[in-house]
Length: 200
Image (cartoon, rainbow, N blue to C red):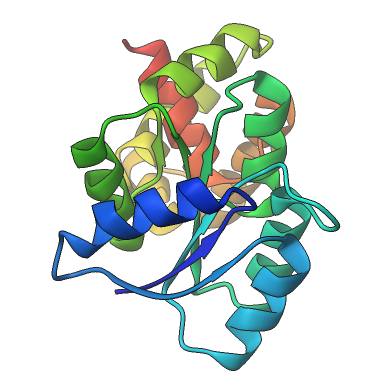
C-alpha cells in the first residue's frame, strides 16, 4: 500500500515514518506539508491512501481531501489530526474522507485503521466518534426508514433492500435520500457509522 503523509509538523512526519515502516505492507511514497502539495503529489504519483492532517498552511486538509476525492475517488483518505469536534469530523466526511483517526491513538490502532480504511471499511476513532454522535441532532425516522437504515448498516445493496422490504429500488433510493436529509449526513458510509454508534 502506497501512502502519502500530509502534515506540516516535521516531528509528526518523522514519527509516522518510524511507525509505518515497521509494517512491510505499508510504503511511504512521499510527505508534504500543505494541501496544495498533497493534491499535486497524487496527480504525479501512485498513491493508495493519504494520511491527511486538517490544519495546514495554504490549503487545509479538508479542502485538499475534497479535491483529491473528486479527482481520484479510488484514493482512500484518512484524516489524522488532534481535532475531534463535530464540525471538523462532519466537514471531513462531507469532503470525502474514508476515516478519522486521532494522533493520540496508539500505534497499533493507527496501523490497523489504515489497513481497514484501505480495505474499504469506514473507521472513526472512538473518541472522535463520541464527539461526532453526541453533537448530532436526533431525527425521527419512519418505521420503513429505520428498517432501511438497518439494512444499509449491514451492507445490503439497494436491490437487496428492495427484495427484503418488498418495494422497488426507486422507493429504496427515495427513502435513502430522505434518511440522509433527516440525519444530515452525506452518504451510506456515514449512515452506517451513525447507526452502529447509536447501538453502542
